[in-house]
Length: 257
Image (cartoon, rainbow, N blue to C red; front, side, top):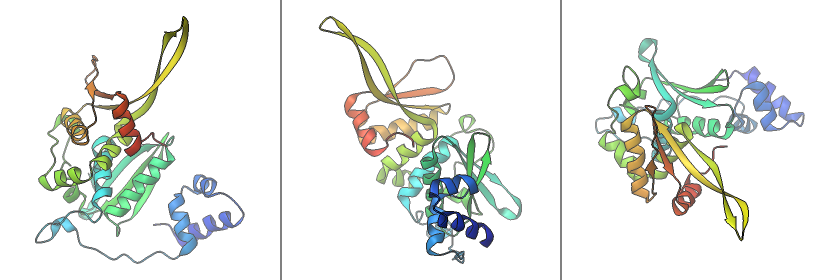
């Protein structure tokens, strides 16, 4: 949580006519937070909402669509670490090249656990979007010792229900973590003249065969055609290149930004 001095300094820079983007870069505070401070500078008191998974009858997360997106991010570039007094840190690592992705990650963390603090830890070339809670293992039972590709990764039935209801959010989270949209090119002869031809495609790469299967199963659910690439390294890369499937991905996922 940012102190009052930091909030006032950020707002003072905005009042000088600076853009939200430039103030965010200088202070390390997200644009969303600065916008919120312009409406209310005082920090909201925490509601202390109980964990929906720890109730007598476990309930789904407060925002299932945001959770599906966050689940994809976590499976790709996330980790959960224990801290003192039973508190856990969830960290999603996002490269600096995609500020929109960083904002979306922070928004998803806040939507899933509105009463918990979310902050950014700057690293070399990236940001670890971090949130604390005693209940992150409740939301992500895939948490465990060791690397994800060295242990079984399977969704609980309640998680699968959320993915089935919000498949595109889950796919978008996976692409935003370990995937990309690129433009390939080739040349072809047109009326005797060789011309350059460009076409977009999506890739998703992961070392865990379980996570790859979750990705491809969800692509099948939404009617996206895919194929694995033949490569010598341990990681598996899934390609989406057919025009209709790329169009679907562009509608619901799009390039990182």
